[in-house]
Image (cartoon, rainbow, N blue to C red; front, side, top):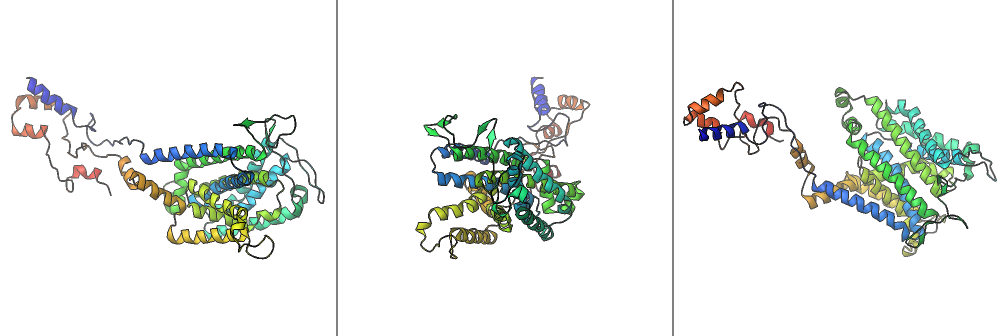
Length: 459
């Protein structure tokens, strides 16, 4: 009787992974956190810690370079959401950046001007910056009916009209922009604390015996905006909207069949990208102090396209890396121009540092398109594969649901009757061959032909 009970308990328990209700219920195996995800998290934490400590040791020229990189990275993330993730070509990024810059200058600035008078609403800087970002989003919303109906080169040509319209407004709407000479951008302050050089008698912030001046304070402000923009974009891509945008990029017809509102998502992507550009414009205005209309032409839009192509289309970290390369190259060449004897002085008509930088990242775009269309992001994934040895296909296979009642050893399970007849049969004929076959399944099933194992086959 004890032997019979042990055999019955063994049969009732079943192999691991089976359900008590029987066969056919899908089960998703729990996949532990991969080594790749841990490495990415560790790298992200290290980069943030290094970025927090850098302004305490860098010279002013490198501080300005870092501010330029972070401002460009915010705009590049927004353009990558539109062009890299959704597949919508846009050349109007400079227009929305200009809206952010001059919108903040007008909302929070005071009236002034020498050669050309301009006005200002003198709102609190935080409110003015928020209104400038919203204004850029509203401009994108006004253009979204066109953006939702066009794609490819047609959308690129249509968006190019916004750049010409913006240039006309910037040069002629003097009461807001200050005309060709530009206008001053007010100092940013948060809850009464100004991000400026402390005056005599003002409160000074000192970290490790280093007094934080204007550029150091702006560094932490720019870094906070970049981190918020990065996390928002990453979470957006990991959710349902991100999958819908990627489906639109891959095949609009298939996305529509799957129930994705293609026009609405394309319009939403354009609005979100415009708001990112507006935030980048606010940061750029704080950096330039006196922006001029000539800085927001077609060249700026093409420069942002170069950033996302070099970094990798559809990759948020790639957008940051591409922005760092494109924004820092001219500043580095200008800083170390003495080491390049063939460089001419700016404005002399020869090849200066700015022109050489355009040649360099233009050549980088060609090299990326020919050799590695995935950009720097693809190279990073290859490096992670070399370290972890785990490919994306292997992770997909590990996370795939098991749709058939197959044991972890690959052995098929026997279906049990639910009326309890198995107990009587087992007790009455314990030594029969039919009973032994019910207790012990075949040891080596043919996984190529056994239909019970078809659900576990991976492509």
